[in-house]
Image (cartoon, rainbow, N blue to C red; front, side):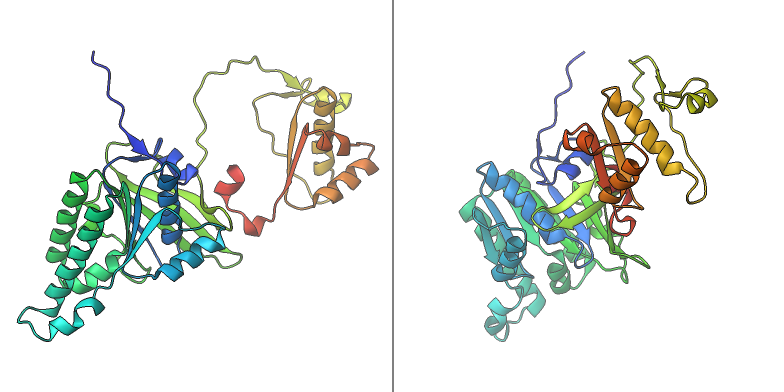
Length: 351
């Protein structure tokens, strides 16, 4: 049997998204990035181009909706620059207003033709490997009808494919409008949707979904994401339990308290989960600390995740019960993390 040829991919610039995509974006294709205003489309697009710049690839950001100054401000907020990225500021209307008064053609037709020519000219001149087109909303407004919009997009896709360009087309969608995007979903090689919602309490919840990717068995469904200063868009792929066979023989995990271990038939079996339930003050945290202390003294590593108390409070409470854990933490044997439940998504906590 002939060996299956591996598909060439390029990094999206977002490691978590590359993981969802099983390595990255298939090369030489056109992709749609959809989302409401403020969902992270521009930031993700800059990360995509910066990944190309890091590899020495020529990159272009074609902007019909944002100025170079606005893009620089977004980049600066993360400590980035636009060095190596060619920014082409185009207007879908201003450049041909004077000519529009002297032609028998519809103004929308003239605007569309002039915009297309300007984009194609920039591509021919700079020959990019990666391109971002921001945004499709402006082209929708000047094409006036869906069939014409589809024809323009199909022609642009063919133009890019002939030049082996990987392109991200940003598409602004709001929750009040139809978000199916059926006029572009069928044309693009892949569709990535960024979702932003405001919960009843706490911060903004952000998610990402690869709703379509031809020829790639993506990890479908929603994955949590965040926009972080200095990092940009950060994606947290859902953790899917593996089906690998156990290679280590199960062992009994002891608490160090003989009577407690006896209740569990000699100890807790490794590879299992135990839920400890009880009212406040009944000893749930103390029981967990007993198991942690016993494991640390056996030379094992331990991870503790705190939601209801801070790390210093945990240390003092444990020390009051005769369990000194600070040195284990300083040595790296004990991993401690404390979280504010209102400020972290399930996906981020899982990662």
